[in-house]
Length: 142
Image 1 (tube, rainbow, N blue to C red):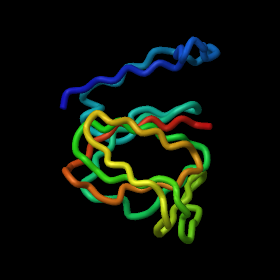
Image 2: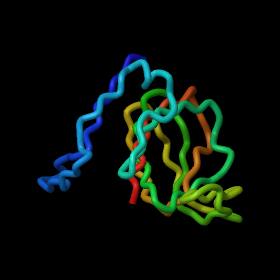
Image 3: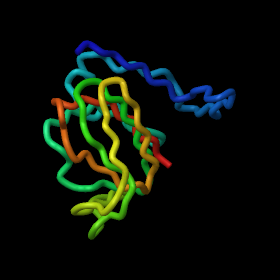
Image 4: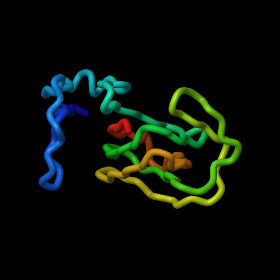
């Protein structure tokens, strides 16, 4: 899987320009680092990761500050969002984990799909149908 991602701190979105930051600069992430998986880049505005799953998530996740953007590159999975988290507990700063969730909406994700999970929404991979599931993650810090 030879992939290279180029990340820019300033983007034009629907004719709206994000204000320029002094630290804004183009950042290239070499394919060797992308292929190695894990955290690729982190700063105060966003976090970039490559993730590989072979089993579903062990718990429900809720991010209090980060909006997740997933781009599925390989595999298929069932992903549940929303619903009510059962016994939510703080796991780390800005992170809450729960044993399970009641209700929610099932999403069947496959290669090429993108899903955006706003901060505060419970979510969990509940089944990996065809694995491994490999996906690109951008966490936008709120």
